Figure 1 (spheres, rainbow, N blue to C red):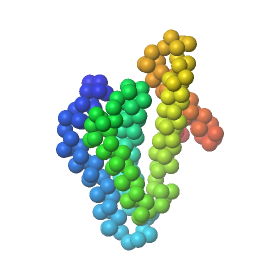
Figure 2: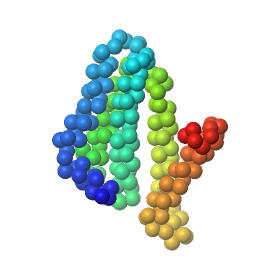
Figure 3: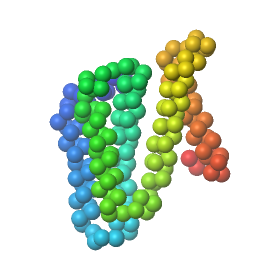
Length: 174
C-alpha cells in the first residue's frame, strides 16, 4: 500500500475520519469541564491533555505536510483537495490546542515542547526543500523530485542533529 492508497482509503471513508477528528477536541473540552479551573496541570489531567495533544498533532502535522506538498510540488488545485484528509486534521489540531490552552499552560503538558520542536523542524525542512526546488539547484545534480524528497529528509535529519548538539543532548536522547 502506497501513501496515495492510504490517503485515498481515508478519503473514501469521510464519516469515520470526520467523527474521529471532531471527537478529539470535544473530548478535550469534556476533560476541561471535569476538573476545577487551574488544576489542569496536575496529575492525571496533564497526561490526558498530553494524549489529546499527540492525537491531534501527529495527524495534523501530517496533513499540513501533504497539503503543502500537494499545493507546491504537485501544483494541485486547493479546491480539489479532500476536506477530510487535508483540512479536517489541521482544524482539529487548532481547535484542540485552543481548548487545552484555556485549561492548562502548555509547559505543564508532558512532551509538548518536543511536539512543538518537531513541528518547527518539519516546517524549516520543508521551507528549505521548497527553496532548493524553486532555485532549480537540483538541475545541477540531475536530480528528480524523488531526489529532492530524499534531500529534504537528509536536511530534516541534519537540522535535528544540529538542534540536539546545540542543546547538548546525546544522540539517544532525541
